[in-house]
Image (cartoon, rainbow, N blue to C red; front, side, top):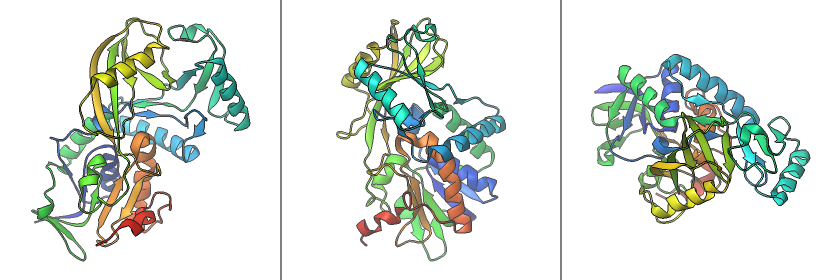
Length: 354
């Protein structure tokens, strides 16, 4: 029997960052990860953006989490000798005069000057997209190459002998007052970081997920030189050397992992409205985001099993929220730090029944 402090189930963004924080705190950890299942993390666009939506909403806790994520990811790149964090910033060309007036009014009204500035029409930097009306430039935005980062984490965990490629068989999982047991593992606690698959977890299927399917396209855009993410409802992420990712769709019914012709056509039609260059689609991917009904994470312990925990529900803002909240979860687990009520699953305990 191998004695551990924690079993972490899932090696997506949430599981990887939490397991990493636990290991840095000198905790004995084992990650159990089913490599046969598709995951949203491996197809995520990985965008982080402090100002989002048609009403220029500031991302929840933006003033805290964006300085933190920059420090965290740049430090992680140095440790892993890899490059996956791209602070490219983001440009949102105005789609029409009505949107132009609306966004300019909101920029003044909400005092968003720390993050936004107005770009004048027809600047040469953006001649490869429709820019007749100018647009909004967002600083502190960018993207993380999530698959590359997760590969680095997996290598790190394997070298540390803290990783097993395995689907959890719940019939083999036993909980006791002070321990959990799984096959030849004995741990003080188990933490589920399974993304969408927590909807099928017998411990946490009662939590109100609101999962959304998303599709993205990979494309070759010959001569594409824009360095920023371009966003006009749908987005273009520059991957380098003329390669781009286009996205993305949101579907809340008929959830599966299959790319669709309708998704392909929708993304292509939307991007073609503001991209001035021809392109060739080279790939298409689909995933299911572990979004939540109140758009806040699911963190904390099970109402009946005090050594069973969840860290999940980061949704579309996973790369933004995960660094900060992985450290918050560490504090909760190790020093009894109080989780903020907006993220603590205690807010849904009334939905649980034995």
